[in-house]
Image (cartoon, rainbow, N blue to C red; front, side):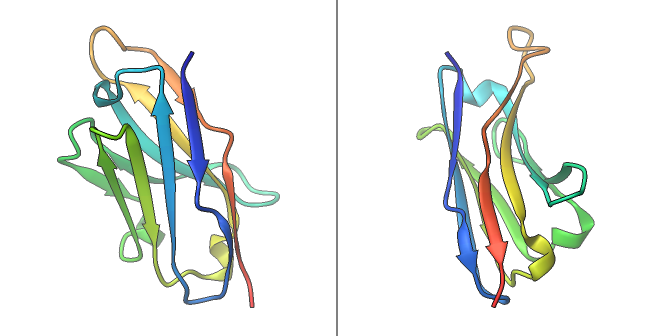
Length: 121
């Protein structure tokens, strides 16, 4: 059974930092592109960042490009999101997503249950 478990969310003051983690199990982690999404109250879910299966390439939403860093450790089956200079508008539930990129995992996609990040003074 595939599980993606996010952690690291919480309350942080504006300008602060948080590091989110997503631990994956039940899948061949290195066969998946990993993405972070977020959903703010009353808004649609949006892509935050993505990282290729080997970690060689990353992609970010424009508003987060200079503040957030996605990384992964395939030996630990974990993807991270380092968030710096947090703003109140970053308040959201952050979700981990895995999407298969090999022939064997094509079409497979999994989601975590999310971790809440609240940016407030």
